[in-house]
Image (tube, rainbow, N blue to C red; front, side):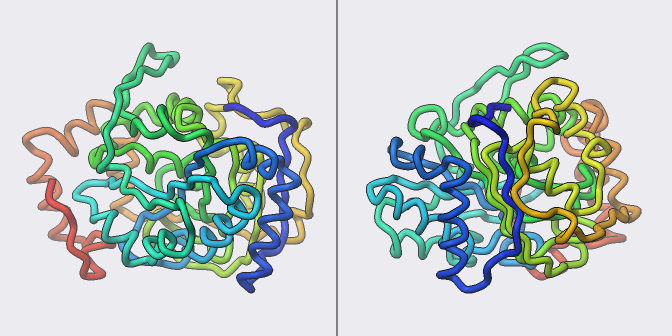
Length: 339
């Protein structure tokens, strides 16, 4: 994963007041080098984590946090064109366009000049081939990243994930794949996610750590108010550090371990941490429920993924499962898209 100079990670308590939060982001941007780069480019993309139809503590990035980041970028470069968006995903996913509207992200277009809110699943795509240890693998990437975006910024929340253990800056980019059935790529996740981050030009990470999600995820679990702020010029260093803040050894997070073996993460000795992880550290735990084990098994197998989601038995299997349990979105009364 590409780095911007020395891997720097800023760790601090999150400022709550909107003006103070913008000042916190502004100062962090100067330390990690974002200020200089923002002045030199024309177009930037910002990726919040929006895995739910409405704002949900510990699940979705707050629009207030993105507003403060946009305000910072506009101070550095008033003419900067900023795209903010997410793709639709999951089995029978909800409408991301409606979610962006409901969570007030559309309002940012009115508040700031040259800001555009996009549903990545509605944009033109280009097929690209990724070199992996298992051979070339093709994915569709929104063409805007290849033709228009100069660099991208990821803004995750600190959450437990029932499959990947944690979902932070590197996992957040999976939402940029526009295919609503992108789980077909899950068995290659560990091998391609770093290359996807590079293709999408992600260089900086900012943590909206007002709330975290404990016990389970990415949509259900126990929200925790942790009030963390983190910023980095290295997605790898960011995830390694925030994983430690959550009480986990990053080497036990499968995709981070694989990326380290592939040479895609920085050496821990090269990372400079500005702040005190120990002071802010909280103990997160992963407790999978019975239904988590079905996607967990499919996650590492192409054949099982096909059987669960794309075979002639898929509809019957999910019908049986839904008889005994409710998906999080269904149980909250939201209408999902049809396949």
